[in-house]
Image (tube, rainbow, N blue to C red; front, side, top):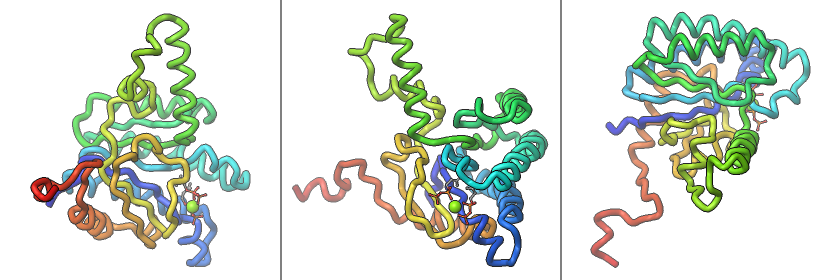
Length: 240
Ligand code: IPE
Ligand code: IPE
Ligand code: MG
């Protein structure tokens, strides 16, 4: 079995999952966050080295205040729990996205969590919070343009690799497999640059029900994919 090195997940469907059970949407978010912990452990056990999850998008601020507040409260608590699990599982945590829009205490917890886990050698776990791919690219371009003006970068010498150094995902390999739960077939502003050659897997299973078995199914399907990167399969090369 060829296990993808980096799996990116759009954890979707918490609200609908809760509603189907006659529960408030926020109950779905709470269960969803517990599932993140479970999947982190399973992913590492399966040999996945990098896991990136979409927790809150730049567009999620458009939700009703009550839901945004509940999500922020959950994130606040999650950072604390994550500090413990990361210590237990030797996980290295990094947050991607523009955290400056978050409450100061959450920002502080994020920085503490990143600092406390930076030398860990287990799963590389990225959490996308107030993340939007277009926003990430615009922020990157701003920094790059500033470095050009300051004479640190010659515009003529900008390569794809140069640009990547300015993204939040700097140093993290591109995802091999992208999973979206709960039946939506779109990217919702997730990792647009980084997913250029990633294999996609969509499932109707809502995130709180996405189990170890579901992850195994996704990896099994990934194994049947033929990643050509614009080239041709080796066995086809003679048939030109
Ligand atoms: C994903 O679940 C979690 C977040 C976006 C924060 P949703 O809240 O999007 O759940 P649905 O898609 O409305 O069911
Ligand atoms: C994408 O899910 C964002 C996260 C999972 C955090 P959404 O539920 O917000 O996406 P749309 O609105 O259905 O595209
Ligand atoms: Mg959704």
